[in-house]
Every structure is written in C-alpha cells, then in structure tokens.
Length: 605
Image (tube, rainbow, N blue to C red; front, side, top):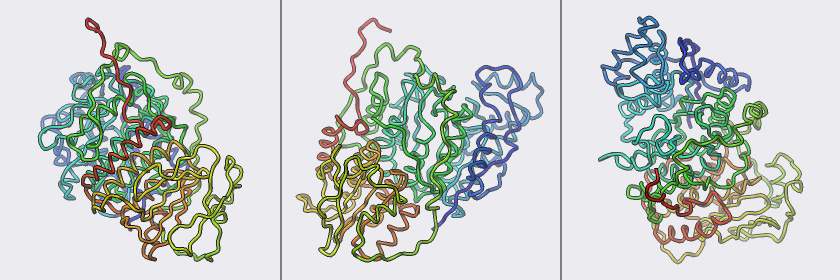
C-alpha cells in the first residue's frame, strides 16, 4: 500500500510582488507562502512530509488549457518596464504582472504536475503543493483574480492525457451574492450544470450571503458533493485549496474555522483510493491561512482530526446555504441517481435584502483579536498512514470497559459520561461473543432510527455505534443497489447525525453472516474516522481475513474504491427520506431545503 504525503514548495515563488498602488491586489503578497512554510516547519509537519522538487511547466503543458496567443503575451512580461507592465495588466481584471511572475507561474504549474505524477505514479499517497501565483480564476485567454495560469485545470487535463482519466467532475462553492459579488459571472450560478456530454458534471454552489459557517460547508459535503462524488467514482481528487472561506479573510468574509478544513480533507480522502492532490489557491488572512494549511497537511499525514466547533445545522436565512443546497440538488437531479429520491423543488425567490450589500457577521468584527488564540496543535501522531500492523490477542473475557479505557488513553469514563452507566449485556452474532452496551440518560437516538436492514445507528455514552449485521428484511437483496443504498444512508443520515452529535468514541460492530462487502465496510470506517478525534473501536466476529482489512482502515489505509454506483433501491430511499424529514426537526445537519420563500412584489428591484 502506497504511503507518504508529498509537500512541494520553492522560495522562488515568493519573488514577485505588486509594484504599484492597486487596492484590489494589495492583499496578494509573498508572505502568503512564507507564513505557511514557517508554520509547517514549526509544527514539525514539513519534516514528516516527502519533499518533491519543483519544475517549470512546458509550453505544451500550459497549452492544454490556455490559448497560444495568451501564452505568447505572458512570455513578454519579463522584458517589460513598469509602465508596460501596467498597460499589459489593464486588459485583465484584478491581477498584476511583474518581471518574475511568468517564471513563477510556470513553476506553479510544474509543481502541480509534479504532485500529480508523484501521486498517480505511486511514490506517495497524497500531497500538497504550496504555489504562487494561484490559478483558479485564470481563463483560457485571460489572467484574472491574481491568477496567471490555471494550475489545477491544467493538472486535470494532464491526468487525462497521461494517466487515462476519462472524465472530470467539477465542484465549486464560491461567494456569489446573487451575481453582485466579483467577478459577477452568470455562469457561476447553480443552474449552470454543463453542456452536452458535460451536462451534470459542472456543480456550482453559490453562497448568496457572507458569514457561512462550518455547518454550511459540511452540509454541502453531505448532501451534494459526497453523494455525487461516490456515484462518479473518481480516480484522482484535485483540490483547489483556497482558504479565503476561512474566518477573518478580507475577500471571502466567511466564518469557517481552520479545523473544518481538516474534516473536509478527511472526507475527501475516502475517495479515489486516497489519491488526493491539494494545491494552494486563495487565502489572504495570514493567520487563518497558515492554520488552515497546517490542518490540511496534518490530516493528509494521517493524524486524527481535531474536535469540530459547535455544529447546529446550515444557515436558514434568505439567500442562505439551505437555499443553495436545495437549488443545486434540484438542478442536478436529472443527472445523478443519488438525487432521484428527492422531491422536485423550485428556485426560491430571494427578497430585496439579498440584493443589497451585506454586513460581515459579528464573529468577523473581533476576528483579528481572536485569531491569535486559535491553537494549531492537535493530537500527537497515533496512526501514520501506511504503517504495518501486528495483531494482539486478548482473552475472550476481556470487558468492553477495559477496551474503552485503552482506546481513549485511560481517560476517566465517568467524566464525560453525562449520566451514563453500564446495563445488561447485549449479544451480537454468535452466543460466544458478549459485549456490554451502554445507555445514556439524555439525547438518545432509537436503535431503529435508520430503519434499514444493514445499518442501524445507536447513540450511547457519547458513542456513535454502527452495527452491521444480518437483519430480516421485507425487501430482496439486490447486489450493487445495496452498496449504493448503504452509501446514501451513511452520507445523508449517519454522518450528519454523527457530526452534529459530536461523539467521544465511535464503536463499529460487525457480526457473522453480514452480507456487507469488504470495500463498503472499509468505506464506512474511513468516513467515520473524522469523528471523536479518531477514537474508534471495532468489534468483529468475522473471518480472520476481514480483521486485517479492518485494522488497515483503522491505521489510515484508504478504502478501496466502490466503483461507479448504480441507483439505490427505491423503497430504501423512500424510507430514508421519510426518516430524514422526521429527524431534521431536531438535527439541523439533516436539512436539505429551507422554508418556502416569498417572491418579491411587482415593481420591486
């Protein structure tokens, strides 16, 4: 199994800067790279990564995306004087040129391609490229938004050409404000889904208000990105790692805290067999940028994710996250089987306030005073990706309470039990195997809350316990449809519930006779690794071969790809949707739509 995390950086990419006064561009500074590298060094993360040398991209690689005319124009910038550089810059939007920027832009593209080669060639499992200039705003024949060449777009075309990647699924969330925010593009709205063979492969999630929080980003992952991504089944995940959505950023004006990027990264690592390339894009608050990069790299290295900030469901205001999620799911329903069970929704009409300038949320006002107190430190390394494992046998009489104490590092169980105590034993699988179930006296999810034959959810002693066992079902087993149904339930019900509940321990139980495939079982383990700071206990009564696969997943090995998923069983999805609607009153992360919105009166602007 391939292991290791690549880190690509070269100080040369800090050697250009704005040479004249431009208020729009003054935030794009060389320090964006230096603070990230310094933080990674101070945290000991850079030393644990595999250093990959940079290279310059060739003309033929840049021309995979950009026009020859544009490339030839940029090639002339090293020989321009200041006045000529300003004149050349004025034909584009919110960007600046410098005599060294062409050299740095070629290095940024080349570094991105080096990362793709390292991951796809099996030298490392994943990695991050710290590059400058960024690339996500660059167009075929135009520089834009601090960007010269589109690094990740070139990487996608490069992967198609050299590694047999057949198609590309594009996903973007961005500040939009009903087209009032720069760059004011109509094609950035939710209903631009792609054309012809690309229809359904272009997913835009427009944020129509500022101040989006951690819950909003997780909701989009659970209800849009991950279901579609699992159905698509990518061979490689390319991340435009822009951190202007982090709290305190002068461009994004959002309220995502750095720790959420660790969780988003962890969720993406379950795709494509763990092949993930993160490439630095935006992020202009130097404090939150450095912390967000550290959280991302530490997660790529396989460290446990930090506790999440309080999650309570997505924003429900007009122009909110729920409106965007609802619209995106509706627009892409014709193209993806995972969305077929959702009801038909019309685009809500936003009120007048959505088309006015928005104030920044209260947490941003004091951001500069609070950012310094955000701790970069996470748990020490507990399971570096790719390490070997050796089994340790315990007597069959070992009590679950002993195992709980071991896995939580000897922490006093009563301190976090919230009135929890051990009750009668609960038998799982054969009569020889007995484990103690724990019950809590507050906030209990009933064991039938998922109403599905293969996956029941319990909430006990600050624990999310998933029991995958053979349960009598009125529906026939239907092969691959069951895998698709399982993933729908895990993504649309289990993960939102678990993240909002914020357990202290995850317990997975698997008994004999389970028809759940090994790959699906490993996917469930991998997706739950972001919970409880990685504290996970697996209780198994299965073949010895399955124990090895479970141990590998717990140690951080990526789960095998499930392949493109078919349509889930309609009856299962209808039952899941009824349950989701019933539970969403109490669990905000289950929501996928807001209340019906009123159309503005005639004559309004």
